[in-house]
Length: 122
Image (cartoon, rainbow, N blue to C red; front, side, top):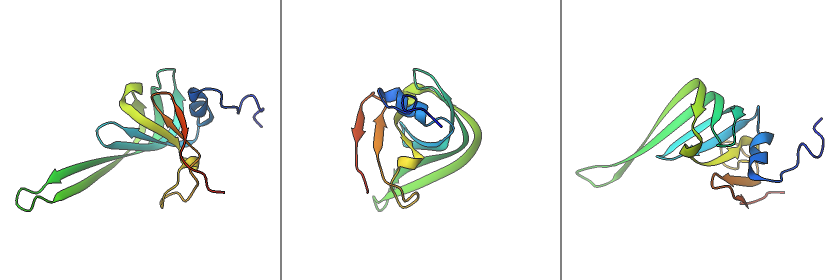
């Protein structure tokens, strides 16, 4: 069992440390999203993810109707290195709230280094 000091969140990287060996969600720039198990990270937030599902969303405009056409492409990758300067936010899957996960949102870690409380369900 983790001691109270080991599980304390004193700085932004502590949230990442507490998510080791857990599934996380990473929102990348250019409309890419990753969901995978966090195996390792460093001070630059470079990460090694395992059992990764990547979703790429593209929006195109139909030339005739001018309607937006949203397309998603999915792929799975056994292991993936994610460079630290490429993501906008990181969430622990246990803290997400949406129809896919049905959990409460606790904390959102923006890569800029600030931690913001975005909601809580009792």
